[in-house]
Image 1 (cartoon, helix red, strand yellow):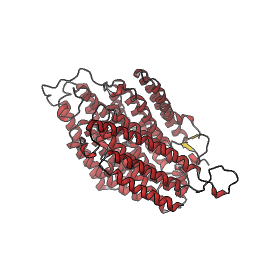
Image 2 (tube, rainbow over the protein chains, first blue to last red):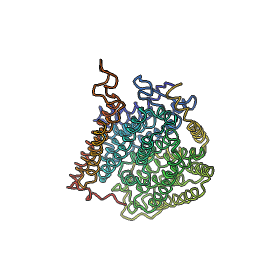
Image 3 (cartoon, each protein chain N blue to C red):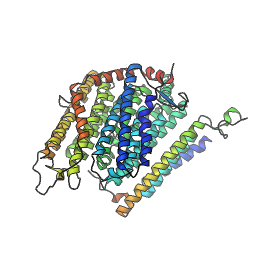
Image 4 (cartoon, rainbow over the protein chains, first blue to last red):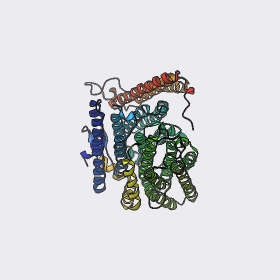
Length: 494
Length: 112
């Protein structure tokens, strides 16, 4: 079904990035352009979600070349849901930019780069063509590298070099995988590849392509053997960018893994899933224990992302419908919780004289800031999965999936790791908000605005108290994913 | 023809990985670009039909034209690798000015 609304979340930010470059002298105008663009993208993504819910896969064929020959944007319900998550966090980040006191936010390049990063992110979720996925991913990587390179943190440049080299290796794997797929099947449209793979023809080269694609997605979402760039890169980023990177950009890899196991290589999926469970458990423990021991509040949250991605991978690894619903709900809830926590941490760090978030510096900094403390407390409880908040819903649905998969040992390990999450969140909360501040700590009277994190925390509470729409959507998305023919017919027609 | 491409891709891949693992960041950047070029060669090799005439040529038999899609992909990949390479060199230039060296072992403040 040809739906021009699909174009909006991708091309409105791209066009606005170009427009914002024209106003490089007037940062205020740039920000308003950016806000308008991400707001339109947000509304359009909601529209696409609704259209998807009502009548299946929405497509838009670019340039009039019908698939499988041309490029097609084809969000199904999974992409549409993840896209709403992405646009919401990007919108919150844009609101945060208005109240951000960092120096780098004033640079004329900041807003255009932020918008082009958003373009890459939205495009990667919407595209129905594997080479276009590579292009959008690279757009995202290059923009975020520059955004981190111009960060106020002096270590930004070092982190940016590290990330650019490592993520480009990931992209190389993706390219080799694409080349292998093209050599085997002569097509690059996801739906067409899936159709040909379903036909039973599986040469060895296609299986090699599966390995390559999996490596690429694991690098992108910082899963255990490929995780080492993530804490460095995310900690050095400016706060609004950090919030987007650590909550949604890592989810592109998760999306890729879902597509890989549920649409393309469904026959090889059991093997992939076993590996994902092992990597997920290692990631959960490695990430949570590292978060417990680290020295910086922002770095703690970056390690925590690494652990939380592990939970999602366990859900994908179980692979039963309930587990996939759990993984999907977890993915979306984690994005809101993590981005709000990062923004709150950034807001406290912005009041410090040297803007540092080191636990030794920041100890007791929030003693007088009760409202920020309450927000952080709510976020921490949500991340740990305490009942009235949305983290509980995601943990609950994940465990429900595990019970269906009857994988008792992994459930036990995952629940135990949830306790570690509670430990490190409460430890950091006490450290920042309960300790007696040192007498020579002079906080600035004003810091970053708290509008954006407050909105996100509100969303977390709302999704915790009234989780029915999200869970219903996830259930429907998973039941549609269970039947790849729906996607194939939706894109290719017939 | 494909044998030559395979050998060339393999050689360039080895060369690229070797350079990428050097201590000097500028050599690393060179290795990065060589690796991407190796992949570009691979892309030419995987085309559906490997003729020597451009697409849409008149009066040529069917197998003699080359696959236009891989060329389109290649152009995009070249632009992307070129952009990444330029940004990588720019970042290395900034860090070289800051640390007065391009030795990657001296840039070790991101630990923990």
